[in-house]
Image (cartoon, rainbow, N blue to C red; front, top):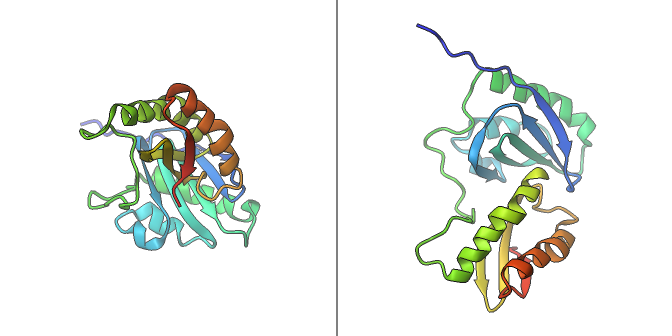
Length: 196
């Protein structure tokens, strides 16, 4: 009987617009077409990789999607002090084929979604489609995610996750980039704001 061999993990890092977030990109899928953001050790229950990452000094949030893990640290240490050890840990963890999430893992309830729901209006559907097609790919390249929260009276509220959450340039990106795109594709949108 043939055994399936795990492809050795190759990991490289990418900076993000958020100086406190570094994107660790892996040469294989981690969470295809899905994501999870874990903002503290309490949310890491049944997420073994997150539990271990929170043991590193100054790690404050973890975002996992497609083929990358974005890690956010506080201001007390610089990335050159943390990155080599985290990169080595991730390689070993992935090479041992350990699970990212256990089947019992429950996503934190605050996670918004771009999935079309039965009760979505025509405008909601157009917004979610535009987000997925035109905004999300660019945001993912920077190690983050953006999700629909609500649309009411011309005001679109979005949830920023991963490197986008707490990023100093996120307000500019939201107002100058995302707001312009959304107004172009969904004229009903008059303003775009981030959920607090």
